[in-house]
Image 1 (cartoon, helix red, strand yellow):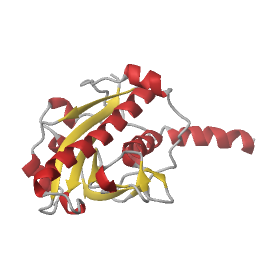
Image 2 (cartoon, helix red, strand yellow; image 1 turned 45 degrees about the vertical axis):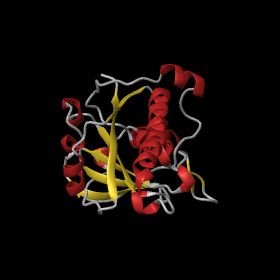
Image 3 (cartoon, rainbow, N blue to C red; image 1 turned 60 degrees about the vertical axis):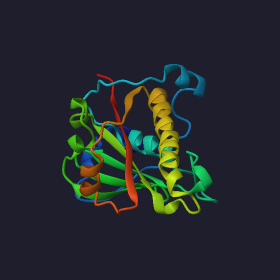
Length: 213
């Protein structure tokens, strides 16, 4: 009987919503399942921008896979990410807006560090769907990491490097049957204050993710 119950308990845990784990604390993400999802060419064929989302929360496994695909560490021996960045500056950090709070994705530890408790999803963009979609990502570039770059080039590099991460998220969502859209309509000054960013940190763009309605 014990051997029969354990698999059922494991499946039950997989479908517990993220909010059940995200109360007043950091979240250690599970190891991503790199064998999951659809083949690359199928994902490319199905990649699209969608602005309709169910209010159903993503599972912890989906959050883990989503963030690892975005810019997780895929070469631990060098600390390099799934997404390229110019000169390996890794200037872009991902802030994750969930119903329970705002988190910073720590790719080395593969965990979410709690920044602010509470539902701030509406602050992640101006469109109506942003406030109710389960996940919003805000890509923040730290210009101080761009060593030897000209000041006039830093905005360009931040856009390119955020674009790499955004496309990884698009492909993960297509592979897993999720909806997503990248968004430029964000209040950067308000986000700078909300996230308590340093002067050299700049909110570049945002992306909304959720289940299909």
